Image (tube, rainbow, N blue to C red; front, side, top):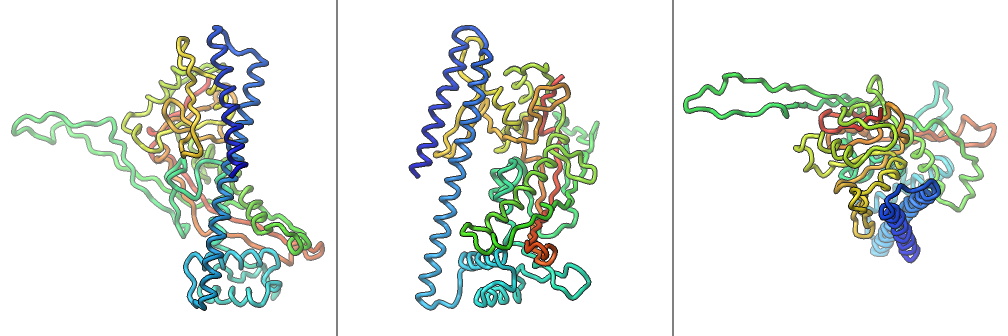
Length: 426
C-alpha cells in the first residue's frame, strides 16, 4: 500500500503543477506558449499513467486478498474434513483446474486434478471435448463460463462499455447465456404533452398516438485469432501462465470490441455509440469553447440529466485540451475537477462524470465527432456468455507449440438517439 500512496502523492503534485500552469497564463492574460503546452501535455499523460498504475495495484491487492481468504477457508474446511465445498471454494477449485489445463493440456494434468475435472465435466462443467476434424484425433477442450470473468476484467481496460460492474459502464449492459436476437420496445414521446381539459371536455380531441418501436440486439462473433505459446514456457515458467493467456486473449478481444462499440455503423455489426448519437452542437476546427460544451450538454433534453450515467465521452487527447480550458476570462478555475480515487470520487467536467475512450476521434479535424454528452444508460450493449477459450495441441505439433484462441459475442445500439448528442467539428 505504501507504493500506492506514493503514486497518489506523486499524481497530486503533478495535478497541482497543471493547475498552476493554466492559472499563470490566465493571470498574465495570454495563452500558454508551445513549450508550456508541451510540458503540460507530458505532465497530464504522466498523471493519467500514474492513476492507471495505482488503480491496477489496488485491483491486484483486492484479488490477492480474496484469493488468500478463499485458500485459507478451503484449508480450514479440509482440516475439519468437510466434504462439501462452498460456492467460492468451487470457483477457486475450477480456477486451479483451468490453470493446470492451460499449462499442461488434458492428458498432462495431474491425476488428482484431472479426476476433479472429470467430476465437474460429468455435471456440466465447461470442459467438453470438441473434435477439431472428422478424424479420430482428439482436438482441444472448450473452456466456457469460467473464462468469461477473466476476459471481461482484461477487456475493461480498453474501453468504458463493459466490465465486471455493469453499473460503472458507459452503457446499459445486458448479459445473456444464449445468442438469440433480443428485442427491446422503445418510444420517443418527449415532444408531446397533455392539455388542460375543460369540464366534460373530449380528451380524444386532437389526440396523437404514441409511436412505439423496438430495437434489437444480436450476437456478433469476435475472435482473438490464434496465438501460439511454446510448450517449454507453459510447463516451466514460474509466472501465472493462465493469467498471461487470459491477458493476451482479452487484450485482443478488448481492442476489437471497443472499436466497434464506438464507431461501427450497425450494418452486419454493432451500432457504435458515436454512429448512433445525434447532432448537438458544431464547433470550429481549432479549439472548442466552454460555451459550446454547455450548448452540447443542454442540447440533450433535461429529462435525461438526472440519470446516473449522464456523462461526457471523449478521447484522452481531447480531454487533455479540455483540461486547459478555464471557466472564463475573469475566472481562472479549470472546468475539469480532479477526483479522489481513494474516496471513490471520479474526475468531473462541469459536474458530470467523464468516460475516456481511445477509439473516439483524437483531433479537431473537419467532420470529427470529438465529444459526446448524454445518458449512456440509453446505449445498450449485449454481452453473450459464455465466452470461450480453446486450446489445440495438434495444430503446431511440429514446432512443439500450443495454440490458443478465444471467442466472444457482442452487439450494441443507441436505443434512444435523442439521449446522446455529439459535438461536430467543421
